[in-house]
Image (tube, rainbow, N blue to C red):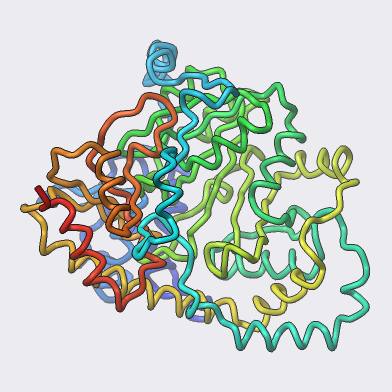
Length: 488
């Protein structure tokens, strides 16, 4: 029987400690693939904990792809070792069918979300915007932010006027490292962090760091803006299709891409979370070629509503192949343009040698303000408030939509993470007709087809961003949206 020793002083719940013990044993091979785990009741008795503790640990491991269940048989360990035979002989064929290059001309694959001029003309009359992922203005922590600003002006007047290093102020980098340790369990050296005014700026730094001859692989479907940024920087792009476990490893393996840009914890727009087995597979593929790296975009991990965030690729990486990226625009406001990335040691040395002459693009005042905001506990309180609010809003809007299931809606794909989900409609209307009809009624929507860079096809699936709708407007917004489908 497995036996672990818990530490009450660790500050982590017992189920999280148990989850980490088992996860470590799976990762280092102590627990083998397809090995049966103890029953929850027997395991709890042996460990001297409650059955619910074991159940919660097993549930978290299963949700992340470390274990799987068999009806009436219990839980078993997933095999995480990459089997090269699964890829050999298939990668090239898959690559030819699924990985294509889009040029820099901006014609096919341009994927402007609303290319029709009528959309822009009608935008000013929008009443409900299901395409916006901005936080509601009433959720911004104005009083605490103002309090911290006054403190910074009073106590750091000299530091504000001294140019910061290219990486950003030590104060903010230290605060970010502390936040990642407490929230994500990530041990990060502040010297490995680079601060920038938005992820777009950080992408441009990476392109310069790697060189414009490198080829970038992006998720298909995916966030449109990322594709536009890379194409605007005149680098070649390949689009790698997704399956139920995230980006297709076979296609990536057979492609000529050097840099893979992915959001494994919560893909936009499909909501897919990459399980542990696929994560190790992707990491192994990156290790096979010296030029290969992974950009991990963890854009909304703080807003996950179904438990603790999944472990990052950065944590799992042992070869210095993962660049971790995150932003404060999702949790604070899009107008506070502060993002950051964490480079592996070798890349950081190259950055300092080749690009260290750049000035940090975020003002010292904002950097010191955010650092104090984090270190004084205001950021954690703000995140907790956001979660409570959006969990409530999510429940309300899903409840409204379920009233139309089977009639106007054939399915709701709710992954329990982030600020969006998908709804599959029962309609004969094309995606473009849906959007135009909605905009005519003052409702802005986007469809899954908007996020494909290559061949367009009607999906009948709406990507529902709900953060800017507001709790009080959910009933009317959903009623008017569904009313569009019942029109003749």
